[in-house]
Length: 102
Image 1 (spheres, rainbow, N blue to C red):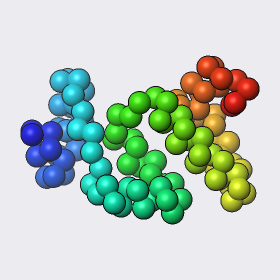
Image 2: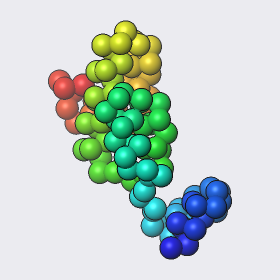
Image 3: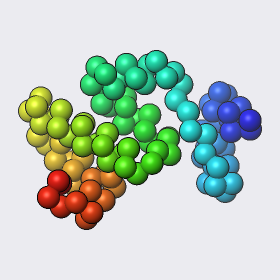
Image 4: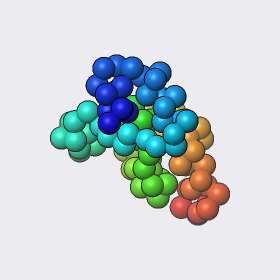
């Protein structure tokens, strides 16, 4: 409840610190419909921003990042796709655990 209050009132530093110290996270997005729409419509910048505050299972993160990279390649955004492959934790985990798939 306290975490929700902090989020709703824009107390981002307090929210972050409380989550860190309590080891409890507020695993929500502002709008589920908006989040799903961003995924469906390929608004990956908004999706990645929302993901930064969520604690999702590692496998789901890998699948989502993999999809983002594939769509970026299709859009010929090669540099951005390469950056996600090389600089994000989910993709580095994929590289270590399933190098053929990577």
